Image 1 (tube, rainbow over the protein chains, first blue to last red):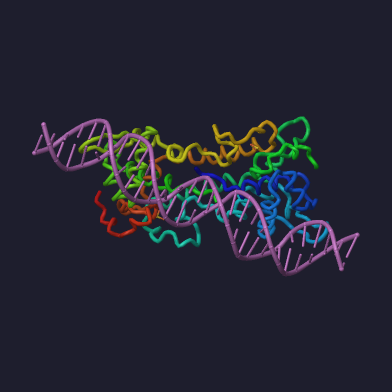
Image 2: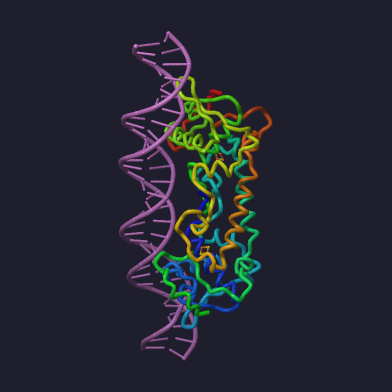
Length: 162
Length: 162
DNA sequence: ACCAATTAGAACCGGTTCGGTTCCATTTCA
DNA sequence: TGAAATGGAACCGAACCGGTTCTAATTGGT
Ligand code: FES
Ligand code: FES
């Protein structure tokens, strides 16, 4: 049903958290805690995002991750592509996949591309900055979401360490 | 990676085939053959589409399926929703799913909705008629596509029974 | 009346994917 | 040198999903 992989889901949440304090580097552990994503998953995801150069990492004690660019210049599409590979609805459209040999014949092809492009554009138009922008006007909301590993669903996280 | 389920993929192909001759009812068997989708899958899909009232079915000998409305009035979004349920990227947004209890708090929520809406709109703006519109100008293209069950990939289908 | 064609609907099955974890190596700072 | 981090890979189990099969109900033709 056109679903987003959990990886991307969590990834967006984590990035959103980072977008609240650009420049500042946070270790995976606190990102995990404050975003209610399991530490293991968090690690995996941050590593991927760093490899994709959406994050810069600093190793060693007092290390951590920080956004590689300003939140306004990072799009949801980029995050998804970093974590789940290129955005392509059908296997036919996936770049290197052996997938489809008869593109030249298939009458549906360019139409698929139209749909694909539409979705890609939609995702590319939402920036991290927009996602981070709090919805409620009475102060910054606590950073907790169901976009969280099933386990970590204890309200303790609500304490808001930020 | 934001992928479309095979069910919807095939479904769109089948619907596209039907859109070439609206009004006319075709039995599942010939739809399967001409669209290069396995007969079993075809049956399953058509039943779902009929139940969703996108198709009208006629039982018994000389039965078959026909579009319930004009191709211009059927959107890709409808087809996908008929086959794979409501279009919702994250589990939080899925209607009845127990999913998320803290929507009121989650700062990301309305932002997710924005993304979701964007995609939905993109899909709702492409009609079957547009999909059916052949791309090449030299005559109607043969109806074969990789949007087909792995098995049925024999070029025999190219014979074009239409 | 009967048979063949066809849809309706459900149950079932095997495989792939993916969410999630764990382990070890490497880097950095105190 | 040791604690705190990230880097990277391998691994596992389970849910999902593509795909099949079987039986019942309906309809038209002979
Ligand atoms: S937690 Fe449900 S919308 Fe974010
Ligand atoms: S067959 Fe590959 S695009 Fe349709």
